[in-house]
Every structure is written in C-alpha cells, then in structure tokens.
Amino acid sequence: MAGKRRIKGGAIPTSSMADIAFLLLIFFLVTTTIDMDKGLGIVLPAEGQEMEIKKKNILNCLINSSGQVLLGDEPTPVSEINRVIRQKIKENNKLIISVKAHNKTPYKSYISVIDQLKMANATRISIADSD
Amino acid sequence: MSFARKTQLDTEIPTASMPDIIFMLLIFFMVTTVLREYSGLPIELPRAKRIEKLKSKRHTSHIWVSKDGLVSIEDKLYDVKSVRNVMYEKRVSDPQLTVSLKADGSAKMELISGLHIELRKADALKLNYSTKTAVD
Image 1 (cartoon, each protein chain N blue to C red):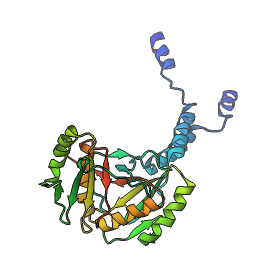
Image 2: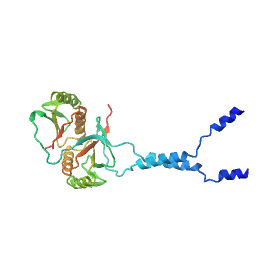
Image 3: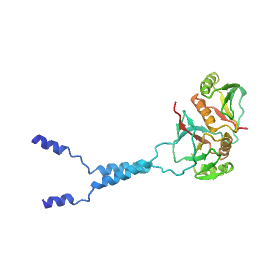
Image 4: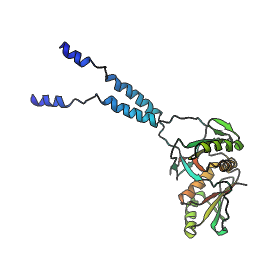
C-alpha cells in the first residue's frame, strides 16, 4: 500500500496547474478587445495631384450648416442620395461626386452623406476644401 | 458485474494534458491581445451603415477630435497646424499607416477639412472615419 502511494505521489501536483492557467486565460480573455475599429475608409489624393475634370462629369454635392444637401441643383433629402446617385452613375459611369461642406456643418451630417455615397457604390468621390 | 467494471475503466478522462491545452489557449490570447494604449478624448462617434474594418491595429494611428474642437494624438493635445509634423513622422516610420479619425458627431467640418489638408501635406493618405454601426 505504502509503496503504491509513493509512486503515485512522486510527481509535482499538477491538479492546480489547470486552475492557474485558467485564471490567466480568463484574465486575457477579459482584457482582449475583440471590437475592431471600424469606419468609412477613404484615400485622400496626394498633395499637388489636382487634375482637371470635364464639367459634365462632376456632380456637386453641397452640404449646408444645418445638414441639408443640394445635389447638383436639386435639394435632396439625405436618405434619397443613395438612390439618386445610383441613377446618375448608371447614366454616366465617369461621374465624380464632389462633396463640399460648409464650415459649420456638423461632422455627422458629412458622415451620413459619405455613407450614402458608399451605399450607392460611388467610388469616385472628391472632397473639396470648404471655403 | 463485468459490464459495470468495463464502463468504470472507460469513463476516466485523462486530465494530464489539460494544462497543456489551456496553456496553448493562454499563449494564443497573450499574443493576440493588444492592450489599449491611449484613452483619447470623450467623443460620441457618428453612425454609418457601409462600414469596413480596419485591417491591422499595428498600422493604425488615431486622431481624436472632440466637439469643442480639441485635437488629440496619443493623449497629447495638438494644434491643427502641428498635426502635419506629428503625422509625417509616423508616416515615415510606417509606410502602411492608416489614420483613424475618431471625431465627435458634432465637430465642425471646418476642423475636419483642416485635418484633411494637414494629412495630405503629411502624405498620410489612407484615412478611416471611425463610426459606429447604424441600426436600420
């Protein structure tokens, strides 16, 4: 009996190792931030890369200080931009949408316009300096 | 009796390898964890639907813009004009740099346009407007 016990108890007790490892594991699980940063990606044009574009290929999209949008000559509700732009791109696939925002425009209005353009799959977006 | 004995023998789960499995999981989480580096400014992010994920946290640099017009990079407040120098240095040390703009929804476009110009001058062209997911 005694000999049997000695053979069994000769090793380092590993039963608590799992508990220690679990504790560490839970710590890292809790501190890991899985929520990745997400948002609307754009690529800015390089400095001094301005080019001239034919007037018929440009659609001005003006945002005023209260977030109302003028698309070309038509005042357009923000939720309608997606549909209108989709239509216009179908007519002219070289269309560049030039977004101009007033200095006092809140950032969220600008984001919702960019979001609408992304929804319309408009890849050619120009962000003009507000003046 | 013989039936009962057989089952008793088979039901023992080997626990010897359990610490190894857990350690492996532990090491995985240790390696993938990126501790939050900077606290930034208190902001209310705008919401958008067509969002994309940022590819890598290691190649991302954040700019916080509060609704009062404060600009913060790495927990230091900067003037819009000095963003250029800060971002240029970052861009030189990491060519794959993506700038994540964490701006408050009520921030004025005047400031955002100013930042656009500064980022263009610093040659940090990959920009991501950080947003939350909008609920339909």
